[in-house]
Length: 237
Image 1 (cartoon, rainbow, N blue to C red):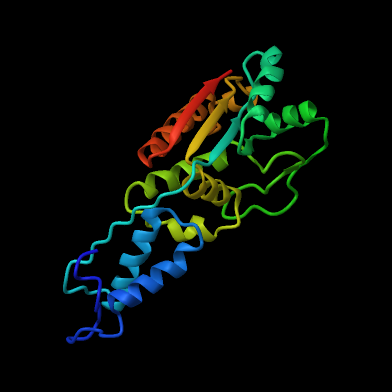
Image 2 (tube, helix red, strand yellow):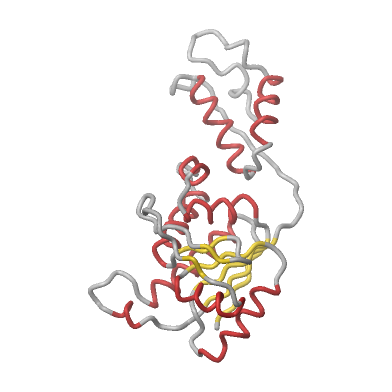
């Protein structure tokens, strides 16, 4: 960190209670929550900003390096273009190590049939415009599809830029926030299993959702995750 971080203060005199030792204790405490290196550096600089009263008189720059074990994550998004490929797609998805996320109601129904367990669709209220979580035994998170993923992509773009929305998804109870915590903070290796089936209901030109938007979301999210340093593999069906 630069020398503008220690003794950050809104007063003319240095804040002698905010020393390097105090910064170490501050960082050790918040690091236990499992935040990413970028989020930790953001939180430190934000704390300095607050101590400066929003008017820093010196450069406050911080860099954080995190060393951690690899953590795989798997995302299933959309049914396959050929229904006969559904079983192969499910076998590959569920055979992978790590947590499993399913996005989309039709996709979740196919997974439920494959696992031979009931799907419990979300019945709660929407949170921040994001549909409620569904439940499926054997799957870590089951969400709605395009609307939820669009919000994840929005947060991903912000994360690799100013990271101004990290508090929103870090503490959010909606599905998009939960996906962000899994992908941005936990995962190191991410496997996408993307179905190319076209939903007839999405082809209405009056609706904002269509096949091309779905494919663009996958492309944008994959690119953003790679920029974050993740290993990303996308398989289409």
